[in-house]
Length: 160
Length: 207
Image 1 (cartoon, chains in turn brown, green):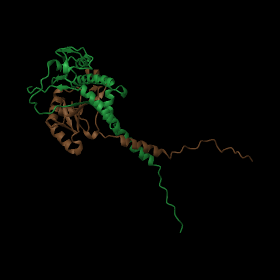
Image 2: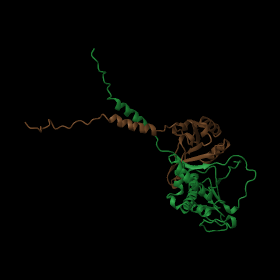
Image 3: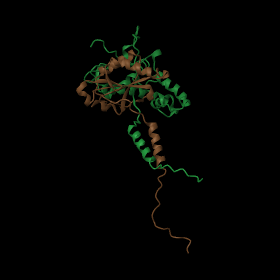
Image 4: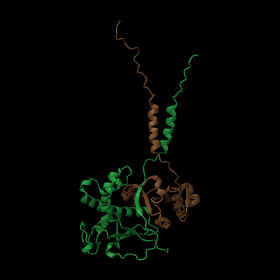
C-alpha cells in the first residue's frame, strides 16, 4: 500500500466565488462616493468652447449653473432657434436671472453665501449679446464671481 | 429538547443585488469636475471719479461682429494676440517711480510703463460669437500666466513648480494647510507684481 495515493480524478477544484460580493461592494462604494448626480437635464445645445488656461471650479455646493444656447431639437418647434437661457430645468428670460441667483443664494448655508460662483455653461455658437445681458443681471444682484465653463483644449478649435 | 440550528440564509443573490446597484452608479457617475476661466465682474455702483489712465497704458482689444480682432487700432490674428499682450505688459517703459526693474520688454516709451499700471481693455460686439470671445480671453489670460510663470521661476527657483501649478495647488482642497501657508505669500507677491487688469467695456446703453 503506497502512502502517496494518486488523487482521484484530474479535475481542478472550483474557484471560490465567496469573495465576489466583497469585491463588488468595494466597487459599489467607490462609485457611490464618487458619483455626482446631474441635477438638471439640458434643454439647450451645449457645446462648450475650448480653452487651455483653465482653473478648476470650486466645490459643487458653492456653484450655481446658468445654461444658455439654442434650444435642443425637440424644443425647437416650441421655442424657436434663438439662443435661450436655461435655469433649473426651465427656459428663462434675462430678467429671471437675478431672481434665480437670489433664490439659489438663499438656499445655501450662511457661510457659503458670500463665496458662491456662477458657472456660465454657454454654447459656443451663442452671441455675446446674451452673455453681456446675463453679466449685467449678475452685477445687479452682486454675484460677481463667475466662471466661463469650458472644455479643455486648444483655443484654435474655437475658430473653425 | 433538541437545540435546533438556525437555518442559514442563502447569500448567493447578494452579488446580483450589489451588481445591480453598481451598474446604476456606474451609469449615473460623472467623475470629471468642471473647469473654466474664472473672472470677476466689477461691482455695479457708478464710479464717481474714474481714475485717469494714460493712453499708453491701455491695450485695447476689440472683437467685431464678424469675429475679427482689432488690437491697438490694427487688425490682428488671434494667434498673434498672446505675444502682443506679453510685449505690452512686459514693456516697462516707465521712469522714476514707475520704473519696472524686472521687465524684459522693449522699454518703448509709447507702450506701457509698468505691468501694475498696464490695463487690457476688451470690447466686444453683441453679435460676436461666444467661442471667439473665450478664445480671446484665453489668450489674454495666457499672456498673464506666461509672465507670472517667468517671474515665479525667477523669484522662487527652489519651489520646483510654476505659478499656475502653485495656484492650482493652493486652491486644491486636498493641499495641507501648512503647504498653503507657504504658498500664499509667494502667490500674493506675484499677483501684486503682475496684477490681472482686464477691463471689459460697459455695454453701451443705446442699441
